[in-house]
Amino acid sequence: MTTSDVLEVIKPGVLTTVQDIGRPGYLADGIPPSGAFDTAALKLANLLVGNDPGDYLLTGDDPGAAGLEMTLRGPTLRALRDTVIAVTGAEMPVTVNGVPAPNWAVVPVRAGDEIVIGSARAGLRGYLAVAGGIDVPLVLGSRATNVRAGLGGVSGRALKAGDSLPGVHGSPDITDRRIRPDRVPVRTNPAELRVVLGPQDHLFTPDSVSAFLSTEWKLSPTSDRMGCRFIGPALTFLPRPEHLTVQAGSDPSNIVDDAICVGSIQVPSGLEPIVMGVDGPSLGGYAKIATVISPDLCRLAQVRPGEPVRFRAVDPDEAHELHLAARAVGTAADLA
Image 1 (cartoon, rainbow, N blue to C red):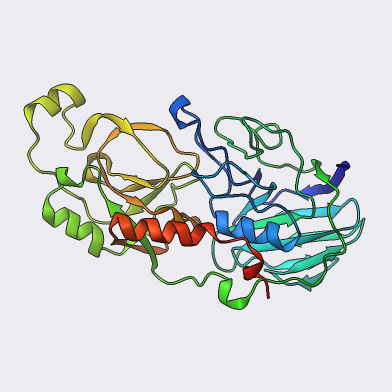
Image 2 (cartoon, rainbow, N blue to C red):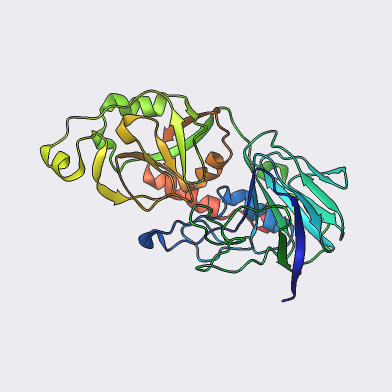
């Protein structure tokens, strides 16, 4: 494979990082998977430009090609060679040399072209793929960036002006691809996040479990890729057995440290449930009322601060079927 710089960063945007599907398999060592928060959007962007879309967050072993995750407002880039790009995810306007270009479709660019990704009109995170993928070094089998840990991507950080991104030479002759309209995600207001209750829902009062599922929660501005905090009513707990107080602490939400998966919903002190994100920790000592199912992490990734969300309970069998269906994203069937 031939590699050379493919994109230069003129302006970095609010928070732009290199991401692939992530690095599953290291949570036991305290290393989260990271990767694209909206994996479906990145897979579809890679599909458009002829890259490997990868497998699936947490259960696959193929991270796919790396692209850019862009938060709220995208970067201004300069193409350093002829290639093709695609932008998916949040509704971010794209221009090439000032001329509007479509989302969810291949966009040819030539060396020297200026690519501007604007502020999101809807959704929060956009994804840019370039033919061949961004070829930063692999770290633990993935190119995904974890900014908090300084791991992966470009020196473990968000992009900054002056960065040059290396890329494998792809297929710039792919010029007429777009995602089928019925495969482009439809956002609802409020967003619905399906959850499997537990593993500590039994510590909450039945009224609080009902309130959790019936409330229209709002995403707090103090949310990020590590955890998404939701504002709403306080949730209460059943009386605690004495041994739990002795072993875990006096706060009613305290438990003996327990494993956390991406999507786990902790409720510290019964206040502001926190959905753990792709950069979240592997252990925690707060009761978890439910877990967002893996396909709906993509929906969570596109919720903006202040926007409403509702949680809906599904059983594990339904969650598994939805997971299998979501794994199929990123195939030729998605193309128009």
